[in-house]
Figure 1 (tube, rainbow, N blue to C red):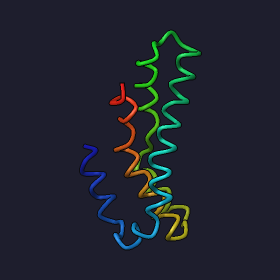
Figure 2 (figure 1 turned 30 degrees about the vertical axis):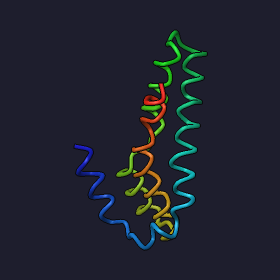
Figure 3 (figure 1 turned 60 degrees about the vertical axis):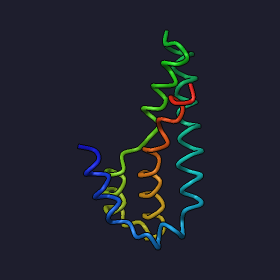
Length: 105
């Protein structure tokens, strides 16, 4: 179910606009997703009986956002074009980044 939704959301994005915002999107999609996964993993280890690897998996699962919801919310809020493109691109790319903490193990 998810791949067609991601494809539809990516189809709406302009490649020209994506080239303009690729740097902040890369920082957000890589840095913040990895930081979020690590923070959730750390909290899960501290607050639950989960082992560190299992907590990191939980962090990786919870770190990504829903690109379809982000796109719909951006339209509803009438965000400026560049902000909408940046948020939408980040939400699409962070789905690919989320599994990285699990692969590093």
